[in-house]
Image (cartoon, rainbow, N blue to C red; front, side, top):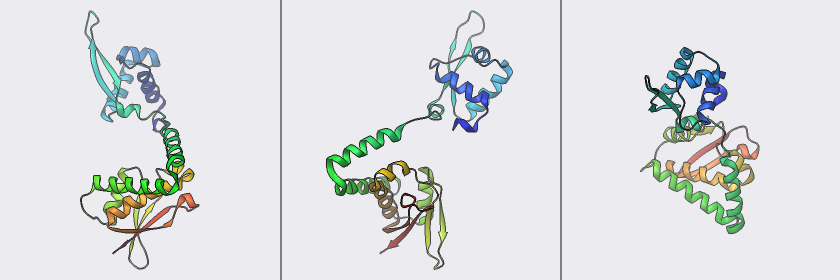
Length: 203
């Protein structure tokens, strides 16, 4: 997120956001009221992190100017309101097909996602890794019995799941399909839990 950056880098990315055709070092230096050397240093760091790209060169009558563009990854740093659209869509679908059908739809989506990431049953460690890639802060905890339990410290669908608990079925189906068993959702943040806990019961 932009909040983790210095003010100059935030302003630099903001300037490029408003200039989709790109800006030169001189233009950025004038816009931000900093030196060309400082701009070069910030551009090098942002390019290394994949947040900006080198665009075309612009003729000036002297040495051509290199233009810098905001990368797709850089654009993703700016606020999005995907959850508003998702909330509207799920509300509309729920009204059209009802609770049971929405639950089955979410389970089907979870199984489909599982099939896309793994072709066979995997253990809890691999499942937690897939969850991390999806944005979860997930880890494996060993219970007193020695059985592994997946603990997620956040929920990437929390806003949606709070309004539509059926959304939790997507995660349960995903985890159950990957792990080859039924999932006990023993603690859930939507149900006022501190974390989400998943225990797989294999046949």
